[in-house]
Image (cartoon, rainbow, N blue to C red; front, side):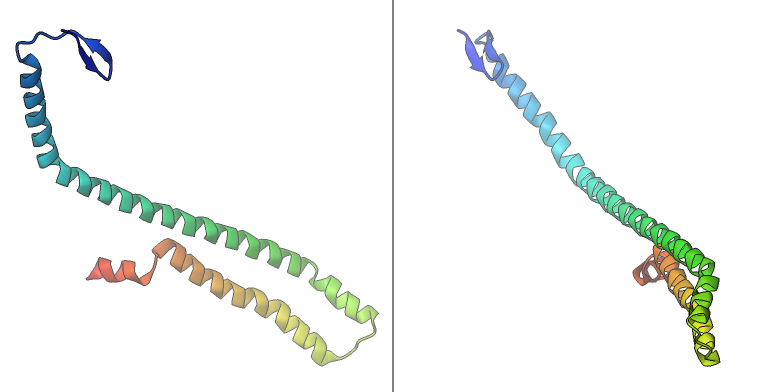
Length: 138
């Protein structure tokens, strides 16, 4: 008698072969699930956490390089136009030496302070957070 399955009609003998195949499959499946499921689950968790940590590190490094490029471009433009800025104020007939000293210090200190911030960002991007160091040396 034909038996229905999800693949269509199958012709199986009525001798009970189907029952033995199912029970054998259950035994094999049970052994695979019981022995490997914990290991497989742990491997999946480990690989996904490693993947997420690696992805986070790549994003941090990418943002650092964007920051470094912005730092470079802005400071090149700032130093390029340093003479233009001084010439503009001289053309306006501003002859206050204190103002020129203040302007020169600002043009110098902006890149210095930003450079320190960039170094802190590099430390965070390449070395990670403080949790990394606590876990590594504990």
